[in-house]
Length: 113
Image 1 (cartoon, rainbow, N blue to C red):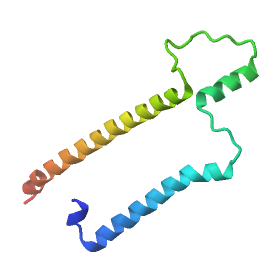
Image 2 (image 1 turned 90 degrees about the vertical axis):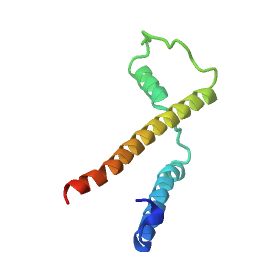
Image 3 (image 1 turned 60 degrees about the horizontal axis):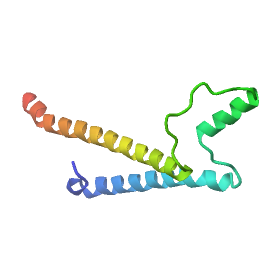
Image 4 (image 1 turned 120 degrees about the vertical axis):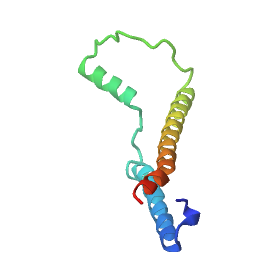
């Protein structure tokens, strides 16, 4: 059922719920930046490297990457692209499953009559 075909009461409830969820997502992104103003928001890789160096200063890496991005911006771009592709695949899968379920519903209703 799309939002356009819903009753006005349910449509308003869906809109309010979406606004609340969007507000929560924005708050989760902004609050850490406000609370920890001078914190370094480094990635897990650099934090792990720092922890290993603190534990054992003589540690030698046994593997090196085949290719390293030329800059941190390119690395961030590739990470964001990877996340976007993953979100697209997940969204497509969920949409496909919802469409398949919606297509099967009239058949199930006909069986119960």
